[in-house]
Length: 363
Image 1 (tube, helix red, strand yellow):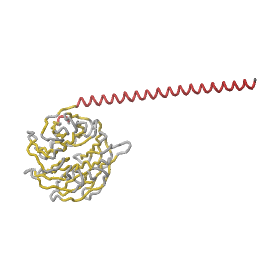
Image 2 (image 1 turned 45 degrees about the vertical axis):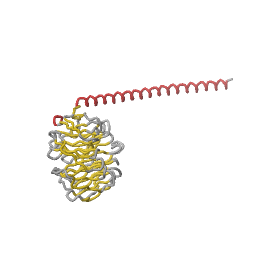
Image 3 (image 1 turned 180 degrees about the vertical axis):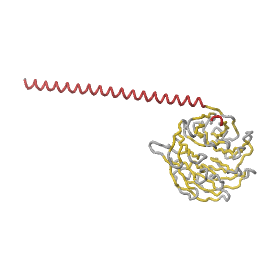
Image 4 (image 1 turned 180 degrees about the horizontal axis):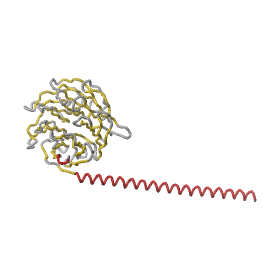
């Protein structure tokens, strides 16, 4: 009996200890769950406040277009303003380039020759030549005085996504779905060199203001810098788990002083880079979908970004503050360009229209 009683007492003590441990475990679990719920609620409240503040900011800076041009029969995919600011050129999936008088909005001419969609157009610095390129793998050069086709340059193995002309007008760069960039001599229409290094489609290219560096944006999630004279890749700007460039980088643009580079990516983000140090300076967020195009104002004070969300955002390039949210397009905004005096911004959209925006008052 004594032994049995001792065993029973030990069992009772062990049971009591187990119960106390369970109660402590339950209290700890309840405390942990309560803290987790509080954190979740706090996070939800914070993000809701952030979203509401962003929506209030968007509403406070929302602006609407000054004028709309219509004439293309399909997506307007490319836009450019002549160096004198008098002529607007637009490229479309309807396979045509249209020229417009900026002051009157009248369609001056329709340039035909491409066999498929046009993705990019660019004026030469003297305004005498217009380059256009697209899905037919051809770059066409047009005489702006006669509107005649001067040349049809071939070399890419697939769609040409973008063309850019150097500040001195001597060199043209083209970016293709074949993951290459080609440099061309403008006067002779000769392919000088093919730049290889990207692992996927090259979406955009831009010359630095001094013409010595070329920037390129690719589906391979990188931005590359190239030395134009040697054709060498001198730097690669890419993300990591903290700085994720998204599924791909869609566009690039140099600031007028050449010190900063802007890129737009599928993370709905505009990123600013220091060209000298190759460091990421800022990430501008607000777009609801991928950023399709970026452009600096001629004086470098503002940066515009166009998105698949159908809007254009105008940012202060120094403070990175949102200056204006331009709404009016009913579909993707494919391309944007500032007028040479920086007072106006033009945009091209999948809604088949071109819009002109008065932006000087917002800068």
